[in-house]
Amino acid sequence: MNIRVLGCHHTETQSSRLSTLLIDDHIALDAGAITTTLTIAEQAKVTDVVITHHHYDHTRDLLTLALGGANSGQTVSVHSTQDVLDHLQNHLLDGSFYPKFTENPNPPRLRLVPLQLEQPKKIGAVQFTPFAVEHSVPALGYLLSSDGGDDVFCTGDTGGRFARILEKTKPTLLVTEVTFPNSQAEMAKLSKHMTPKLLEDELMQIVGTSSAPASILVIHMNSAAEPVIREELKMVEEKLGIPITAAEEGMVLTV
Ligand SMILES: [Zn+2]
Ligand SMILES: [Zn+2]
Image (cartoon, rainbow, N blue to C red; front, side, top):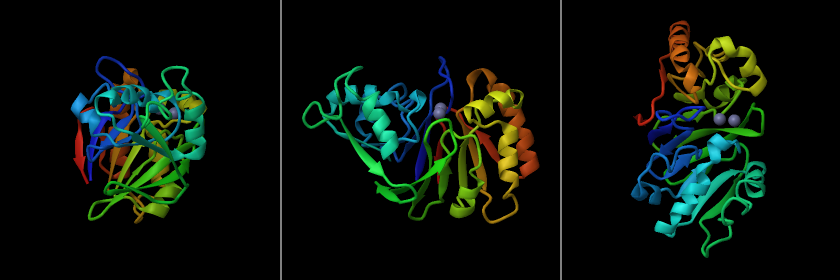
């Protein structure tokens, strides 16, 4: 499985993009940075978008990807649980911002595909299994599995308490968010996001066991606080004894 980091930030600037991982060139995990990073030819290859939750920084590019679909005539499948899809259908995709891309043109640009919690769904060569995670709105983490490759668990946005999912799934790579530095722990608690200290506390529950991931990739960093977050993550890495990489846009991993 090939994972390309299109966007790994909580806030957008000239040099930072919103959350999107591109899997095997054709599956986007979240839609915060699809059209801001991909060429028209690359966008035309995107056949599926898997959504963690409805927040705008994870769904925005559904509209711009659908609009750009005029170039290819393709229908993109948008996968998530029914409650997340309902929210998208009733707000972002209700036809008030742009044409109702789930109905127009014919065939429509977007097709909503419901997933069931903890039920695997094969998309291309990758199996996606959604798990409910703690966040300020209904949100999902996904276990990604492919034949012969390492398992990856992506938490999506979360305030923690996902060690229980790692115990169940035992992924080799953990992709998790760390939005705020330790000094903004109160804000993190209120908005259900992670800090480096919360990541340390979460992983300490399973470090040294077979449930501990071999490595961690951190995304969804707040751009303004990123230098501090990166420094604090180095300390967490030392304490846990697990390599932690703070992601950068354009990074490619093969797992
Ligand atoms: Zn977010
Ligand atoms: Zn969120």
